[in-house]
Length: 501
Image (spheres, rainbow, N blue to C red):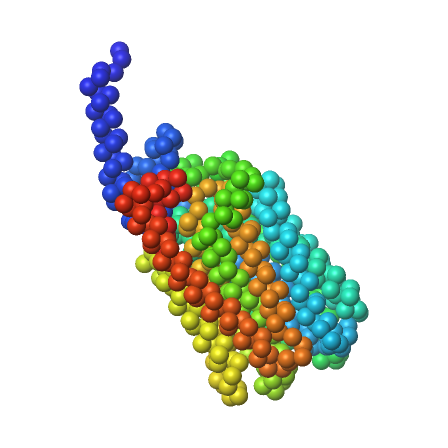
């Protein structure tokens, strides 16, 4: 027997009431995008308390499976990339004639050439072959390259290997944040991204202490110790890459491959992601998607934010040991050891503020604070002559830069709808941030050693420009949201989408 008109009208009224209630309950600015297809409408039901508990259990499994292993990969990426600074104070300069002219800047700079170019192709490969296969293969490969650096005797060969290292490492960071953003809801994402990023920053901050220990293998640590830094760290990286293949999960939409979640857990994860952003399935990257990212002004603001944060972070990682050693006059051992406390403080600061940003559901205003702290820290490093003051400045500067970089990723991801857009944005913003590494290599010139005042000032100027740009972006996004509230425009083609500020 067919349904009566009365029953159909009742069902329609019920569905309209349910949707109206949901939209009324949405916080302004959450950016929830509601599709009109049946699959998404069905997923718009509120989660029951039982489903919320099930989702919590599923997310704890995801946390344990995803964040530590990605953080571990990032540890080895940072250690193998940034052991260059520690190796230079342990004999690398003399062994490869790196001190002549701007050779050291060239060897640093060339890493970022391949790093910038290969990010998007790497993310496309990850989508095709799967996260576990691709990310673990990258780790093993850059471990081999790092090991080979331990046997070089010429700065030109060293530079070539640095180019290869940049190409291979290019895929990790964008691939990791793409994978993380696929699994987590908007206001669950930043603290997880911070966890991944800060595991890398925190543990790798002890890389120089490890480097010092490895130099002691050599008969003459200050002349030949650099070799063992690369050889041992490269071998450890290869081993970790093999381990990662067994742990890294697939994308959430590849349901059949994530056997470590129950069927019920997979269903509730899917429902929560659909409710949060109206998107769950894989979508193809096209030129149209790429152009749609590039033509949005706020995406450029987020990218410049990432660039400025990275410029500061790379400067601290690469040049802080040299400033301690040659400007403040500390011993090789102390110069390497003293790089750890600022990084530890940066970890606590950035994770704490990321948690608060998720909790309060604000992004831009936190970023203004991060930029301000960075500028204060850089000024303390550049201008005073007091060693303790400059050391204290390294705490503030490194903390602010780390938080800027994390915020750029989270803020951008929160204002994106589809899987393809997340794929493109993660590669693009990481590629732009890598230009920060090029910038720092260019402005920290050999002739300005050991204080590097012009370089520190140049990074500070970049952060100041970013602070102004972020303030303008906040004003623009608030204006756009207000226009959408008044029914005068659609944001992202949806009447319910609002920019997250």
